[in-house]
Image (cartoon, rainbow over all chains, first blue to last red; front, side, top):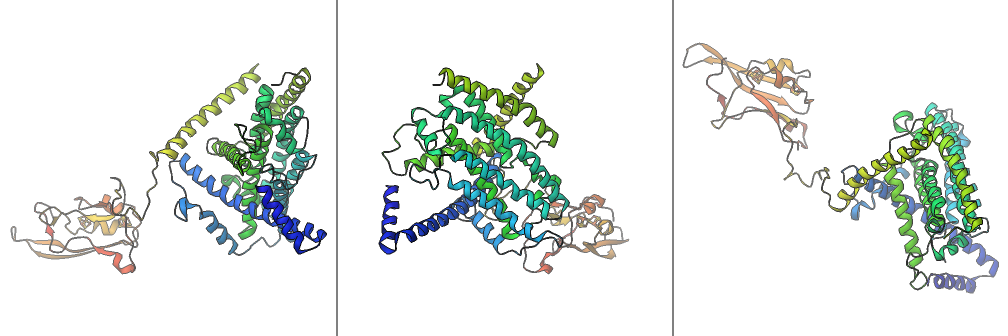
Amino acid sequence: MILNIFTDIHELLLGLMPENIVHITELVLIAVAYLGIFAILGLFLVWLERRIAAFFQFRLGPNRVGPMGLFQTVADALKLVSKELTGTEKADKFLYKIAPYFVITTALMSLSLIPFSYEIHAFDINIGLFFLTSVSSVGVLGIFLAGWASNNKYSLIGGMRTGIQMISYELSVGMAIVTMVVLAGTLQISEIVEIQKDGWLIYQGHIPAIIAFMIFMIAGTAESNRTPFDLVEAESELGAGFHTEYSGMNFAYYFLAEFVNLFLISSVAVILFFGGWLSPFGITDAIPFAGLFWFIIKVLGVIFIFMWFRWTFPRFRIDQLLTLEWKFLLPINMVNIVLMALMVWLGLTL
Amino acid sequence: MSYFSDIINGTKTLLTGMRVTGGYFFVNFFTKRDVITQQYPNNIETLEMFDRFKGEVIMLHNENNEHRCDACTLCEKACPNGSIEILGDKAKDPETGKNKRFLVKHIYHLQMCTMCGLCIEACPVNAIDWGQDFHHVEYDRSLLTKVLNKPGSKIMSGIKG
Ligand code: SF4
Ligand code: SF4
């Protein structure tokens, strides 16, 4: 049914203009649609985080603007748009201005690889997962540049910490993904999901898959700069960390990108471990929008776990952060890959 | 071997923490049992403040409209920012025939008060105390200047002046 809508639009456009222009128009339409998804997703997740945090802390959270306070974040975003853009006098103006765009561009590019359902998948290439991890690593550059270009000591420390944290934990995320790729045998995202028709990968790969999932969740929290790995922002130590000197819309870009990254990490977890858009009861194809529904439900579930982490654990010290990665996660990860490879070789997967 | 026991212990304690906070979340998500948020101003009518809440300084009156203040001005002197002004006067006491101070107006500027409580501590006869009223919104600043002794009130008998 969704496919029908898309073909209808395609044919409508074909009737209006020549073929190569239709192609470009469709690209533009998809880009605009994804920008919309980006904004709505960011605003919704900020609202969700605030509501969930409130319940963890015996509060109610935003509940005045719109039904259940849903439009609170929209109002906040409008306020930020109307604010003046300020900055330090001796900032490196050029880098300072383009830094936020690094973050949102990479978040948007990664978003295009996420399959919302069988039909809604903007960009499906054979090295999908590889492309996804590479592109999302570029986002670090935006944070790093922001810290460097702001000409502020807190921003700089925040930026440096980003460097340390990202280089360390990118490794763990990457290796957890590799473990699952060994099991799936492909990097193409749509194929990884198709393989799980007989059972989610976390079930097919049992022990090593569960270890990989735990490592992925820990490292994913670090990747998205969330508590307990929020040394980059560390309100109590660094003001606001790397975005101390950003105001108005530039600040909002960072804020939204952070939550879109949370969505990205969660969807990768869903694709790799929980069967993407597949229904847990095996009736995906029958009902329209069922794929989209299951995908969103699963992603929200994983996002809830991330939020649960955030409102439970206190922040690490920087040396504890490094110990955790280099002394624990990395060795476990390496053993885990070998274990997974052995299992696939010996046919011990379910 | 402490390496592996560290990992297991760490995981265990983390899960314990998550169980505790998860319990809080689900209780409040489904029942809102422990939610302490007050939905001000929707509940102005029903909101009850706690015993030790410092809302404003009030003067205690008994049922015969009598207060204990003998206009000694200690509270006025104790106040660090001059929020209290005592207007007193002297008159002949009908019982003893001596001149005695009495209170005309205990003027309290709520708009300047920092709720420090020094005046209440300073009062030797406990004439003033904390009130529980929290809704002090007015459109004009002068409305926040209050006279604490009620009109027509007089001093309780037995308070030494
Ligand atoms: S509470 Fe403090 S500031 Fe207020 S009237 Fe008393 S002494 Fe003055
Ligand atoms: S309220 Fe107490 S301290 Fe203040 S003038 Fe009256 S008796 Fe004295």
